Amino acid sequence: MEFSTADYSIFVLLLVLSAAIGLFYALSGGRQRTVQEFLLANRSMSFLPVALSLLATFQSAVAILGVPAEIYRFGTEYWFLGCSYFLGLLIPAHVFIPVFYRLQITSTYEYLELRFNKTVRILGTVTFIFQMVIYMGVVLYAPALALNAVTGFDLWSAVLTIGLVCTLYTTLGGLKAVIWTDVFQTLVMFAGQLAVIVVGARRVGGMARVWHLAEQQGKISGIDLDPDPYVRHTFWTLAFGGVFMMLSLYGVNQAQVQRYLSSRSEKQAVLSCYAVFPCQQIVLCLSCLTGLVMFVYDREHPLVPSGTHITSDQLVLYFVMDVLRDLPGLPGLFVACLFSGSLSTISSAFNSLATVTMEDLVRPHCPGLSESRATLLSKLLAFGYGLLCLGMAYVSSMLGPVLQAAISIFGMVGGPLLGLFCLGMFFPCANPTGAVVGLLAGLAMAFWVGIGSLVASAGGAAPMANSTVPLPINVTTPAVLTTTLLTPTTPPPSPTGLQKFYRLSYMWYSAHNSTTVIAVGLLVSLLTGPTPPSAVDPRTIFPVLPRLLRCLPARYRQRLCCGVRFPTQDAPQPSPAAEKRVPNGLGAAPRDDTEERGYGPPAYTVQETAF
Image (cartoon, rainbow, N blue to C red; front, side, top):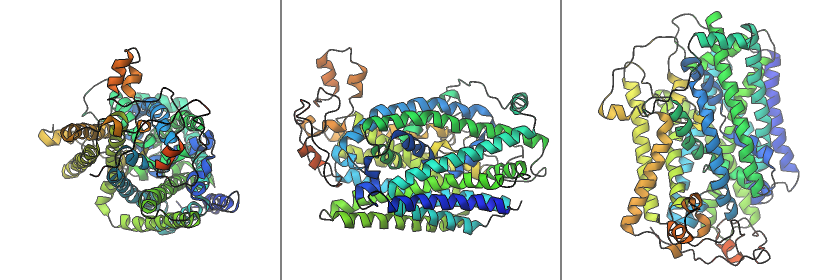
């Protein structure tokens, strides 16, 4: 199907408006002259734009194509993932956000130095950079490749245009431009998906008929309470395994935490986490309904000739182009929707990578860097990562079958990083040696299980039931990119040994890998000597057990804190001396009002320890 002038016009309008938002914030307000304004939007954002930006950050184009394909193939079982959103957003709101926000940090990995030492901070930073650099090129190239295969839309024109426009507004407008373009692009994504659902349902007789026919064909799934972790999707797998996946994204990922920290107050940051919950449910519903409409439409109006092998992401595009073929402009709206997902994800990657590089790798080694030079360097880093993204897109084009493994890396790394932060935040006895060994063990376990599953899946005659790995908002990527549809397959033989282990449901990967980090980290910490209570900054600890067991006498709750003494008040502001110990380098520290509110300075000493 060829695009009309109206389709191209809508697509170009998306790019022009996105670039205009970046130029507006580059020329207004403080004109991005300070590091705090460029990287944290001057900590001035309200909860609603932050919430929509949180939603858009990992609502990638791969997700827009992947979830409907998942529903088309396997039914609505995936819809139960929405149950995980409750704890997956409630825990960040009341555990991670208070700790990060009160520390007044810029990079999430500054926390690791405050809690452990510089070695752990650098290791966490390098792991995150590796994760995002691999991912950002692929998330730009993969949807463009699918679009080119179905519509003839020029591949490299789309990649270059999207990459350069994204680099432009991220470099010029900073985080504030990224957040407001995310808001605009989220609305475009909603509009594109709604258009497909409304028009598609009308063509097959309405949504009631879609639901009825899908139910007859067994696509409306009930609650599967099978506790077997090797079953790909069950209620427990999605509702509870998905919690750990959500925590790795909305709890400790720099791209998301940076948005919390841009809020004008801690209350606004918490509200943004609450506000994103209904938005996530709406997005999940739209994607699932798109998959059901596509299933019914394909039964009545076959999208491809029988026996033709196509990938599931291409099937979604065939469906969209066929449904909207008589409505000029709407195919262009869906393409705008698709690339809005890419823009929002990539711009967040640029900004977060520039932040961690500046705060974790540059500032500690250049303490005398002036504010103007630091701001300029931050912009150059964002621009450099934009060019690197285009380079990674070109590398992705040459990966071939390795492409799915490259995308899978994102999901493999999220779990171990979550485990590292949980180890530091919930276990005061953990020491730097335990943190480093635990993270390395978690990464080794993640790559072993993840790559082993991919290799076992590729080596078999039939695809394994678990040929997927976790991605942002839990997209089944290899299914999206490589699974052949419309061709029935015979059930694979029952696996044993390592083959059985590799069949662990991808929804448990984050839980498995983060637990590995915590278990190994605690064991090594106990063997090498736990951290003395006097060396633990109480601001870096969330006393989860004492708070859960408030009914116990005070002396027992104190023992659960491993000797770390916490202020009686929940949220005292740090003293000036404590602020100087926070390595954020963002100019003047917030005004200290602890004495006005009756709080004394915290009684602790941050000790530098070498690994």
